[in-house]
Length: 138
Image (cartoon, rainbow, N blue to C red; front, side):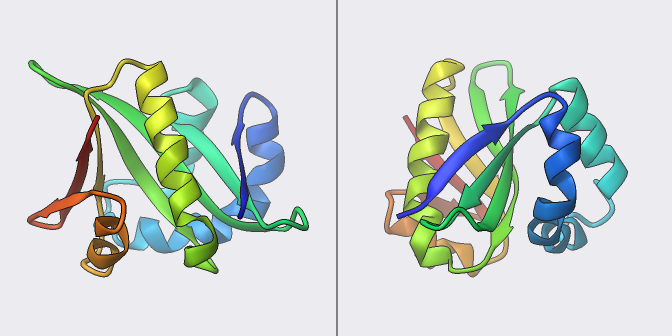
C-alpha cells in the first residue's frame, strides 16, 4: 500500500528536488521532447499535474505527472512521466489515482507512452498495448 498525493502551487518547487530523481529517467526516454526546466514550468503553470508516491513510512518512492489532452473526438488523461522504486507497492494505487483524476476531468480514457516493460505490469489492470502506447478506456 502506498500514499499518493497531488502536489500543487509552491509545494511543487519545494518537493521537486525530492521527486526529480524518479522522473529524470523518464526524461531520458522523451527523445528531447521535454527538459527538466520545461516539466517544472508545465507543473508551475498547471499544464501538468504532479503526484508524489510515498511508502507507508512517508518516504517518497515514486512520482508521476499527468496532463489532460484534448483530441477532436476524445479527451484523455496522459501519464506524461512516471518512475520510482518498488513498483509493485504502488502501481495499482497509481492506476486508481489516474482513474479518479480522469473521471474528475471528464476524460474518456487514460494513456501512457512508455517502454515495453510497462506492458506486462499495466495489463494486470486492464490496460491494452498498441505500438508501445498504453491506454485504458473508462
